[in-house]
Image (cartoon, rainbow, N blue to C red; front, top):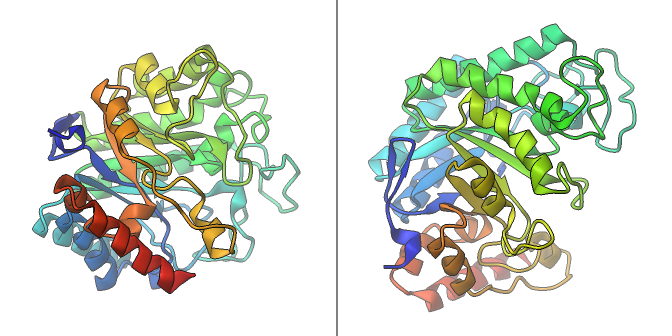
Length: 367
């Protein structure tokens, strides 16, 4: 059997296969409320055979969390009702779904929604270049930290109550949790700054608070990355020992699985080993791991839109070989699922010509 289509138990959640829909921001939720079109969008991917859907990032209930009126919220009766309809639609299609809970931190644009008066904030009041944010209240106080931790916990509690199957915490790509991890943006001198373990304290407190809110039997996934949206070559850890020091507090706090984000899943993370980031995370933590990074494509999709080349398809064989030897447990697919909701079923049935034909038709409409 193709290893992509073997069942998997994720902390008690039974998944029919190893394919995860990667979170991808859409900006189609006007006023932060997911509507019927959002429910239909995710239900199509569930019906197409995706094992677990992780939603686009959705803002937790803190004034500083977001930076757009069009990105969904995870607080307020109207938004939560919209999410309940999304869950019902996905479950009706036979799928499983987790919301990605998100705080953007210092990349927030001043004056943007959903709370225009809220400032951009970060662990040390610095942007991703390490320069000071020229706004009052940009450096988080300990009471601010406590309030944001509580907002994540409340969102997770609501997710379980609504009927979601798991939650994912967005700790990657240069957003708030990742800003605490990263030495460039975290120069605090209190308990939340210093060595890698101290810089992981904020993330660990969020995981622990979420675990307390949802109980022991609800899967909690933590997404992390080395790279940032503004710094593809950034590193939290230059060696496995440092990576282990960052990850261990998350595991102790109650993370059931780690979603290890890379831009190319086939690239080795550290010298002397062909393991990618997900492979190292699994080796160091023993937790289930999701890999991600250009599955099905070998160039940046946005490059094709600017005339810098067409995306080409990578052979699926090397991915299956890594999955077969348990380098990682689950595979997150982004752009291929965005283009074709039926991608999992087509791959399972060996309909590769249909996959290519469908993606080509989509690209012709975009380019």
